[in-house]
Image (cartoon, rainbow, N blue to C red; front, side, top):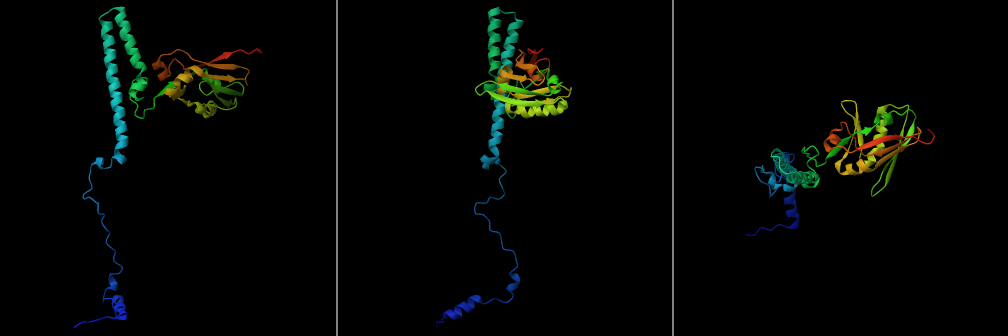
Length: 254
């Protein structure tokens, strides 16, 4: 026996609701589980190297380069010390000293800029030089308001003008100075002893040390920035030396 349904009967059957079915309509639907899901979640970060391992690998590489450089430096210094203690020939002492000096001069390139001038590890690979400017107190507290023109020679000759007011405090004039010298990568701050210290990226230190010049005409004086030979540790600590010096030159009117 065959039972047939016409189109109207089939649509009525599909639209019919079962008794008590409506009360389940508000129930939350089951969340579909991703096909590629893993349970439990893997604890190894190597499963997602792009997310976790890039920065870690950079840090490990920096530490390894720094450790390798410091280890070789220790060997070089120990060899030089041994030659000096044995009172070797002058040629041997000179050769060993020049070899050690050459190695120290390669610090930035060999260590990947991870070791600063005091042989300390720098995690962010950005070493800086701290220095002070001769007569900086007179610049920050001028007797008369004046405009200083800072110039930095090099591949691109750059000039920055900074106006210092006699009515402003030293702190206010330092802020104005930082706004201008910031274009050269310089920044000044007052240390714990009340002295004004400047800092610059080590890669820019050679240009600042040799080519920074400044002229001031508001007070009738001319200032020049001159480099002073100082050892690297003194320049780094900012005690007793300066990388750029301001000297007063009398004008024709004086």
